[in-house]
Amino acid sequence: MADKTSNQMWGGRFAAGPDAIMEAINASIGYDKRMAAQDIAGSKAHAAMLAATGIVTDSDAEAMKEGLDTVLAEIEGGSFQFSAALEDIHMNVEARLKEIIGEPAGRLHTGRSRNDQVATDFKLWVRDQLDATEGALLALMRALVAQADAGADWVMPGFTHLQVAQPVTWGHHMMAYVEMFARDLSRVRDARARMNECPLGAAALAGTSFPVDRDMTAQALGFDRPAANSLDAVSDRDFALEFLSAASICAMHLSRMAEELVIWSSAQFRFVSLSDRFSTGSSIMPQKKNPDAAELIRAKIGRIFGANVALTLVMKGLPLAYSKDMQEDKEQVFDAADNLMLALAAMEGMVRDMSANRDVLEIAAATGFSTATDLADWLVRVLGMPFRDAHHVTGTLVALAERKGCDLPDLTLGDMQDVHGAITQEVFDVLGVHNSVASRVSYGGTAPENVRAQVARWQEVLG
Ligand code: ARG
Image (tube, rainbow, N blue to C red; front, side, top):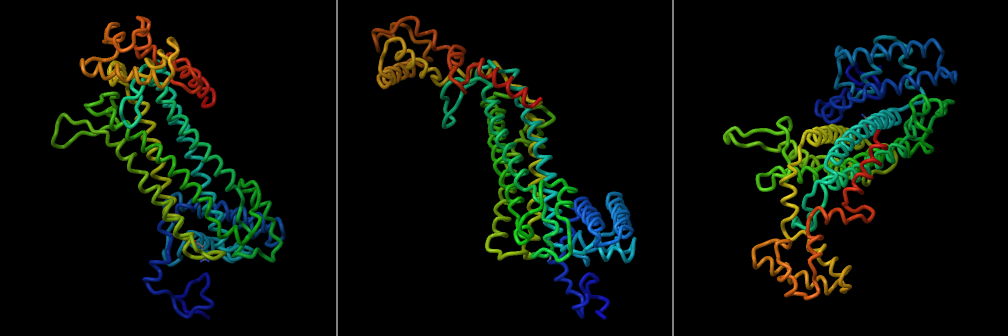
């Protein structure tokens, strides 16, 4: 008989219980209790399969099912006593089940190991998270499309190197983010489809001699099929890495957008006003309204990408199949998932609430000789000049305007003709910012009619 203090799940081989430090490093219950619902769903599917295949009796399976429902109710109701001595969620649930239903609880682990159990639970958890991410991305995309719809023809400066480049439309800028988040969405959907194979029944690593029906459990848990190789099934964590990688790219997009909102809401830019609901004040400077939500969203990439790196390094170099290192997978994923959801929700709220300062945008759009390319294009189109020559002539005109302290449209026709005699009054038509954006009708260009078409396309997709 094993010592009373040794583990009740495997105490047979042990004479003594673990050192307190061993328990502290070994226990994962502090965080893997978040997978309780998934663990119980997995156990219920396993119990039903054990009965259907005759491995346990129907009455034992029925007791397991009812007992597991009771355990879940206790956990959800907050009355469940989690124990670090029982290490993790799997053993906490099973031990409580034993208290409730007695002997049949001991048959639940037939043909199963914690290795396939944890892989299954964690996949179910990540799958739920991919679904939640999808919903949050769609909500953010809808908010961006609404902004684009309202300001399809509002002009603003487009930048390269954060220097004014060419006028663009507000709607076009908003829709650029819709495209990015749409790719994030497709990464989430790809990851979900690829991960949807069930590890349950792989047992410890080699499969089992019991006549388990892995198709049945896979189907009951909403997987497309059972995972085909038991060694792979228990040691694969690339589904979690794919989530973290998609989350990292999405967080990077969020961070870029957050950076723009920080810049745009500054006194120097005043392109947008952020709502009070998503801003904070200063404890000393009464005039301040700070874009804290945007700044925090900008920072979230640090921990999310950090989680991606951390789990990649945990997995690197692990021999097949399971190693306890893999228990370090969960906290990284939980933290990244929580923070991604928070960042997506905060960005959606900010985008919904923010108002673009249309007049400021329009004035800014005309600064920095933003229509110089339109002038060069006119020289090519109307005067038949090679683009390189047109570039040179336009550069000379920009330098002249700079010397005179004016913008390109403020030059006189005489000024223009001093630089190139064939220029006519018509050139002034292309120097206005509205004409500039309206002319950019190439597919994917910034023209308001293009923006409206893209808004309509996405409204249809997003419903
Ligand atoms: N808590 C463990 C984990 O998260 C469960 C699997 C334990 N398996 C084992 N062979 N010790 O990985």
